[in-house]
Structures are given as structure tokens and as C-alpha cells.
Length: 178
Image (cartoon, rainbow, N blue to C red; front, top):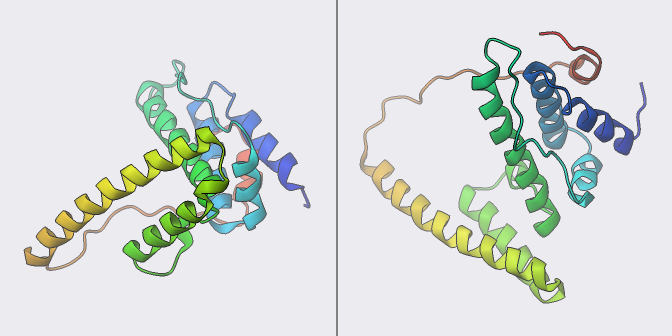
């Protein structure tokens, strides 16, 4: 099935207007999956939009887990919004970089600083805030790595993994059930 990117994105956005956390969660997972593993034009399209997900007031009162999952839905949608915004500002998806964490952050900030004088005033303010956060995070990361270097760790923790199959997009877009 061939679908153009704006049509696919709009369909996913429409799904997030549903009152069921399950349907909204499926739409968010699919969007995230396409941002990570889909064609780069998808994340470029999302970054070009003025608004993405406006789920700050999302609350599913109908399902047993609705209240608990509504909090997660709101956080997850904010994360995806921030991911698209950062792509818009620096034209880099840090999560796709194969280099070390410091190198990925540094490259993104260098890209941001190179574009700084071509930005509008409100974009400059956002860029400055991103830069301040970058400096604070790098300081915290450096402190964490100092502690991690002296802490003995026998093996990495195991955790749940999320695997998405090839039929995920069709499943999210057309299925309202768990």
C-alpha cells in the first residue's frame, strides 16, 4: 500500500484524537517507529509542521488502566514533539548517530550555532535555551560518567524490549482494539 507522507502523518494525528489510550498509544508508537526507521522525509515533514501532538489534557476515563496510561501518553507525546522540534532546529536526529554520545551532542550544537545568525529572534531564544540545557546536561553526564567509572558493574541490566513488525502501520491505523 503506497501512502504519501502527509496523508500518513495526518491519519496518525487523527488517531490521537481518539478517547482511548490504546488507540492513541498505537498511533504514537507508529509515529515514533517511522521517525526512527522510516524514510527521513517523514521526520522532515513532522518537523515542518507548526504543531504535532496536543495531548497535554489527554485523559482516558473509560478503561481500567486509563488514568495511569494517560500520564504516560502525555509524556510520550511531549517527547515526540521535542524530537521533531530538535530535528527542525538542527536538522539532525541524534538517536540515529553512530558515534559516541558526546560527539552526537557536539555535532548537533555546532550545527545549531552555525545556523544561529540566520535564525529569527524567537528561534534564537529557543536555540539559546537549547544550548544552556546542553551545557547543563553535559555537566551532569560528565559527573555521571565519573561515578560510573569507579562503580563495579558485573553485567548490564535486562529489561523489556519493544519489537515492531512489518504490519505495524496497518495495525495502528486500522485497529481500535488491544
